[in-house]
Structures are given as structure tokens and as C-alpha cells.
Length: 210
Figure 1 (cartoon, rainbow, N blue to C red):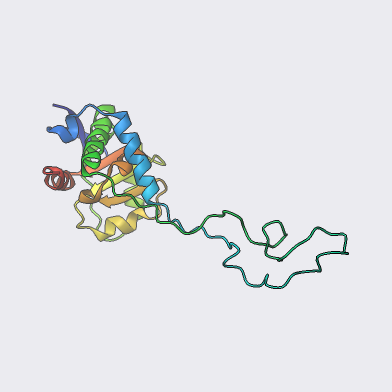
Figure 2: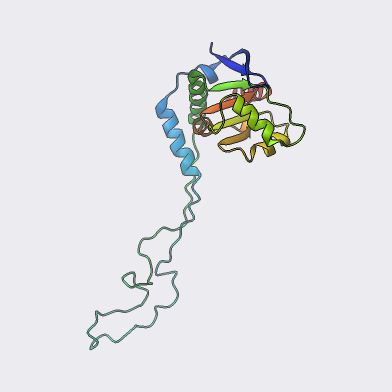
């Protein structure tokens, strides 16, 4: 069973924590992660690109000039895509890109992502410093003592401290998220995963029956 470091609130390694179960002991599957990331990013697309086609443009009902005698190429409308300022031919229109990802894919991707970070040694269980009020300096100092200053890091917590969220807002490359809301994309986007003990229990409880 894999072991991960437990980091105390002063930023030093205090002990190790043993992790068990398929969530942390699965052999990472690159093709599963690739398929999940593609699907996840596609679902984030807004799909609101829009252009004016001939149907949506105003005007163009009157022939711009007579058919013969001008020396110019014949034209029936000034909204033609051939004209400057005319309509767009085959341009993008609003589209819903959402495609529901299979539950099995999400489950396997989550196990692969967690197991990958454990295997790399980039998942740590932490005791966060006490934040009786929002204090960016305290949280930034904690990360610096761990050697994670300016490194892409996500903190997964049990969701009881509003001060933690506010304290993290001005720290670059840091994200804070409730443990039960984590997804495989988060685990791949952020190289360093810090999870509180209560957050770890939340993760086990949330995903044990998935």
C-alpha cells in the first residue's frame, strides 16, 4: 500500500499516511486520462461564436446597380459574401458542445489521476495553519516552507473555512477546492495536491461507491 507524507502546519514532514484502495493504487492509464480531458474541455466550451449569414443581415433587397452598362460584374445584392461588409458564408453559429461523459470513464480517470500523483510523490496530507481571519501571508509562508512557492498547487479541504478561500485568492498558481468536488482535470492541471485529513476522508466517502 502506498504511503504519502504528512506535513504539519509548520511546513515540515511529521509522519507518513498509508493510503489503500483502488482510488490510490490503480495503475494510471494514459488513454483514459486523455479521453477524459478531451471530453471535459469540450464541455467547457461556451459555443457562442456567431456570425451574420445572409438570412440574418439587414438590407440587400435592392439590386445595387443595373445589370448592364456599368462595366462591373453583375450583382443582385450588397449582402453577398463576395462583397466587403457582406454576409459570412458558412461561418460559426451558436452550438451546444456538451456531451455527457460516461460514469465509468469519470471513475477510471479519477482513480488514474489520484494514483498517478501518489506514484509521483506529489500528493501530500497536510495540517493547514490556523486562519482565524483571512491572512494571505500565513498561507503563502506555509507553501514557501514546503518549497511550493509559485508552483501549481491545489488544496483540497473539508469545506469548513471561508478564511482559507479568501486567503488563497492573491497567491499565484494556487487553487482551493472542496475535497468532494475534485475531478480528474484538477488533479492533472495542478502538479501538487495538498489534502487535509478531513478532506481525505471526504474523498474516500464521496467516491467509494462510484
